Length: 130
Image (cartoon, rainbow, N blue to C red; front, side):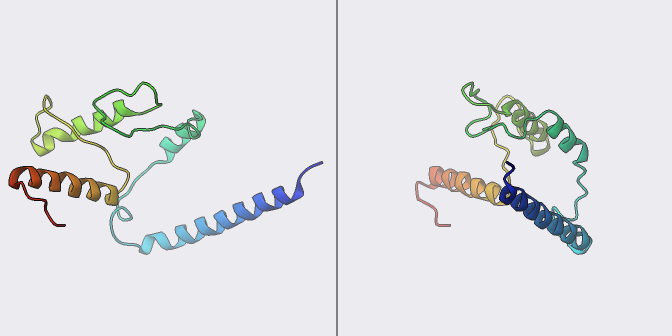
């Protein structure tokens, strides 16, 4: 016997998502600011992502992208590529390089504050106040 409550819940959730998508698409042209005003075309990426069925894999890129983590599924090779691609734009030597790729501006700001405060503390021997 088919579980009708589950089917109803699924339809209700999909209908709610459809209304949300319609609202986003109707209003997105009037939104200003990064990344809303940056044309990003990810349709082909998402097609590849779903066709290759890696959407339900736990890919964990925590830690240093320049040290391999064989115990976890990760995309560290791609993270290193991104870091190495941008390094010359900021004058970094590829032989003396480290970095991370963050998931958001907030995450990037937090890392910047953390590493900046550690750098200041090492130079001044005083704990900076942020």
